[in-house]
Amino acid sequence: MRLRWKLTLSYTLVTAGAILLVEMALLAAAFVFLTRADTLARLLIPVMSDALTEVSPALEAQPPDTDALTAWLERLVRTGKMGTESDGKTQVGINLDPASLDWALFVDTTPKVVAVYPTDAPCHSESTPKACLPPEVLTVMQRALDGEQQSSRLSVKDKERMYGAVPVHSAQGKTVGVLVFAVGWPISPKEWPGVLVSTLLPSAAVVTLFAALLGALFGFFTARGLTRRLTALSQAADAWSRGDFSASVRDTSRDELGQLAQRLNRMAEQLENLMQTRQELASLEERNRLARDLHDSVKQQVFAAGMQIAAARQHLSASPAQAEAALSQAEQLVRQAQQELTALIRELRPAALEGKGLVAALQEYLQGWQQQTGIAVDFQVQNQRGLPLAVEQALFRMVQEALANVARHSRAQHVTVFLGWEGGQVRLEVRDDGQGFDPQKVARGLGLTSIAERVQALGGTFSLESQPGRGTRLEMQIPL
Image 1 (tube, one colour):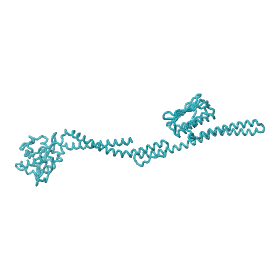
Image 2: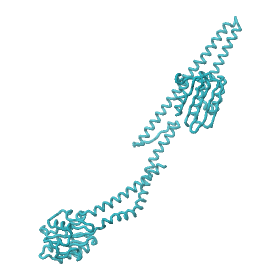
Image 3: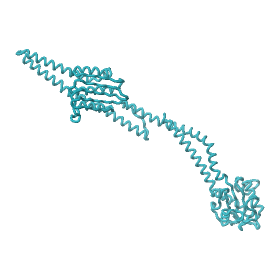
Image 4: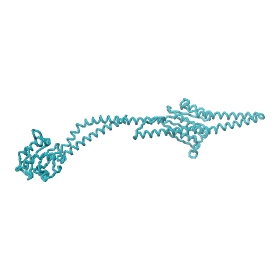
């Protein structure tokens, strides 16, 4: 759930941020577009050039028809309309925002101002442009008189206005004058930062709310599928950790998560095969150990008992006393073989299968082992808790292996077996007071190797401490 809401929040923030950035980019683009000098030229000058054809007769007349020219300029500045009117309707021309035009004037080829509107414009009729127009405006005006056709070269700007010069052509295509006009900035360049802020702030709340809703919906449904797939992976991993390899991840997609699921499924199959192989090897090892124990103990004892019975048969007629002694030895050997077989049977029967629990099974086993070997056993249990079945069986086998080594090699008089639960692990310790040995010089036998492998299979640690004449100590720590 945490990942789903984190993804939802990230989608929300990204969506809101992206929309705000787009809004800022559009406003910035509008600012750049409106503040470029050639913007006015591209929009107004070509259209004005076509509409000015109607005033070319008044401008090329000698003298120019100033009344007609002034009326045309007045209509342009006051109404924003430009073109020829017929029955109250504009037939040719465009409509401008009248508030954007500051002033306009006509200049003939002399050059001289022949008409101007309004009267408070910088120039007046009969004045020379050089006396009333800024130098940069004079430059574009002269370009228009010289026949310049590129509209971007016929406009300039300063901090307050934009200026344009539109050539007026006669019917024959001759330049007969120039229309010079001034347009105020829709928004002053100094005011643009404030406009951006005042525009963004009111819309920020609406944009953020809309983006939050959109991002939350998109993120929720997108993250839902992702978290569902991750949950399936997690559940399968939990099952595998418990040893249940029948669980698998059903994800047929071809993206990274789908590929990961397929690899994890293959890994689970390999682990299951490995566990089966290890169990088969453990069973084979157990059979080999049982065969070795039968060969080393029971077989030899039965063979010796058979020899004693054969000797008793020979002495039965001639010396009944010797025959009775041989039969007594045979009886003792058979009893020893019976004890060995009983011990082997106990080793083959796991504690968990008896339904007694690990501690009770160990107490019973240690009591029987003590009677069989004559070695005193001290069994200590600390902080007893429940254990998984696999751990109980492994610990029981470890005790059997360790005590088997004590009985065969140590010549000990006393053995201490400690089983304690400490934090997140269980610790098993087997300590004797026997003759000990040098671990560096004596090769590790099958029993110690089996203990180490069992501990390693459970992810635990195994340590061995021994010195000649000071006994032996085995410690196994298994994480829970």
